[in-house]
Amino acid sequence: MPSDTLKSFRRNAVHVRQALEFSRRETGRLEMEGGFLQDDVRLERYKRLSIPVRRALNPGDKASFAQALTELQTLRPGEVEAVARTWERVRADIDSPVVLGGSKVARRQILAQWLDSAAFYDRLDRDRAYEKLIDDYGLAAEGIGAELTEAVAQVIVDLDAVAADALGEPVILPPPPKTPKPPPDPERKWWQRLLG
Image (cartoon, rainbow, N blue to C red; front, side):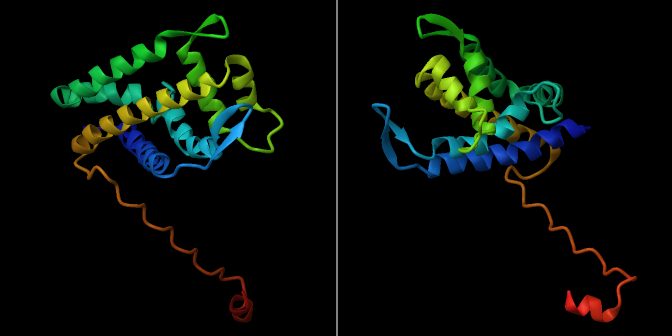
């Protein structure tokens, strides 16, 4: 019987799928900044994607990709095999080093900083995590972070299809039902309820 982990993973994967579609559909206006062409809304697009991807990459989160993969390898070993192989390739890419600024840096470190800076990006933010990422590694870090984020997101979406089958649910979940309005307060007088 599938656990709450798969259900949590699926609810998070809905956000990954929506953000991936939005990211691929919406492109920003190109503008020149610091001698480089920049997409003026790139961080805003990746903010939507980075939040659920961060959750999925956190092994302690109920929406963890690793936990869902482990459970599905028990429930549906044949169906999840291709996703597991793809994940191994993506993980090998994440674990590989890259030379930036004259020294080797783990792509995992760049991905973690990229996800944090995108997830918590605020144009008025005083912390300036994005600017620190660029100062530390240069503009190449943005490209590496964005590429790895999309690769992880695609694997999440692929695993979500297997999870949907295991749970007997449609791949694209319908929106949750709206929460009904609370009943009127019996202590309020009828004329107070009428006036709002």
